Image (cartoon, rainbow, N blue to C red; front, side, top):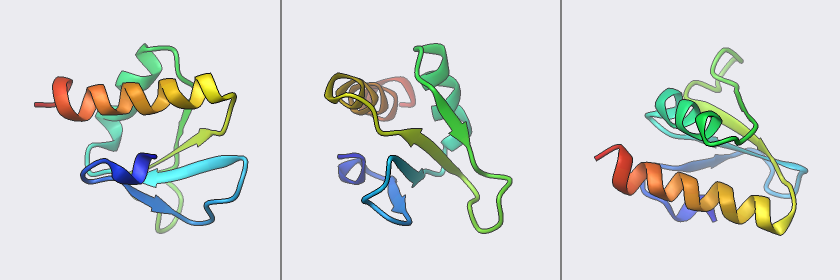
Length: 79
């Protein structure tokens, strides 16, 4: 899952209909994911959620796509 990627920290409950995660480059990651058609919400303005993004848990295919795009950003685009 997302927690396997370098710099990604899962925040809060892991058994919800969404995943809340933190990354130092959350703003750039969000731009990349949105440009790729993902629905992501920036939670950075919420108290104690700096650099946090929220993604809804979707179908297995949607979840795989989120993982693939995040990996692509972290290990290829952001380098």
